[in-house]
Amino acid sequence: MKPGLFKISPGFEEVMPAEYRELVEHGPYGAGMGVADLGAFKELLEEHPLCAGCGLALSLRLFLASLPAPQDTVIVGSTGCSSLAFPQVALQNIHSLFGNQNALASGLKRALSLRFPDKVKDVVVIAGDGATADIGLDMVMHSWFRQENITTVMLDNEAYANTGGQESGMSPQGTVLYMAPKGKKFPKIPLPEIAREAGCAYVGACSPAQGKRLERMLRRAILVAREIGPTYVQIFAPCPTNYKFKPNETLTRLKLLEKEGVFQPKEYITREAQDLLNKLEGGGKP
Amino acid sequence: MYVSVRLAEEKCNGCRMCVFTCPDPNVFNFYKDKKKISVNASRCKGCGLCVVACPKEALSVSAG
Image (cartoon, rainbow over all chains, first blue to last red; front, side, top):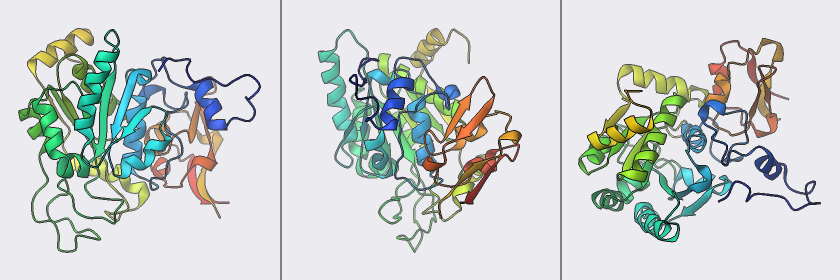
């Protein structure tokens, strides 16, 4: 997508929706905007149907702001809460079958590198915990084993949230939800560690409470995926609707969980990826 | 009745904590020259995350 691709035909300025006009006039395509510039440009997300106080919506917003090249990024989504917001994203995106997202992204990345051999096209998978850790785990892991150059981002809200609150593989042990009245029997899947062992060059786990850290991890993951191999970022975004807390407590709860050590930010970087990041980020440990 | 965020503009110091905590896009606009934010109440869902985050208590969620 070229920066000037979005434009309004002369004479139609007044009848176009306000959101479209804003996107043409103040959009971030090709402008090098980041999380630090939020509020000064039109974001790539528009009014979405996710619940008030949703940590996942905030993560998605920060994710879209931290893409290094939004005009050359294709995002692949899967069924889940995040896919409810996808029709409102001003970015090329594909909605795949439930759990099929990494298989689709592998083919897409190969096709794009054949079609545009002289351009860098980022393929980013962004799916929920159900699609990544439960239903699509075989596709996700095989894309890592095959060393596909794609970034996998998991929005971990610890439940199947939009089907009434069933437990997912990422729910903590003992979780009681609307559709899991007996409590979950086994602990949370350690997917960052699985990703590291499965051959991911860069693995990160973060939360939307610290936007700058989320941006740094996502940018690193996308830059490493361009050159070296698969990368994985896990974003912990609690669900106020199913975990039954007030919508304004999402971030305070997140900070508390991090302070107590229940949620731990993680970063696993292979030596090869670290060398690349040192080169790109100007040497030294940033 | 529509519950949404209200801004007391004189209390705002332009720290932008609200911008980084709001789950809904484009609710807050930041003006660099004035060092103030503005609120687009029609895009707000009234969750109150910005009210908790604001260090100057310039934001509140109310109806009408």
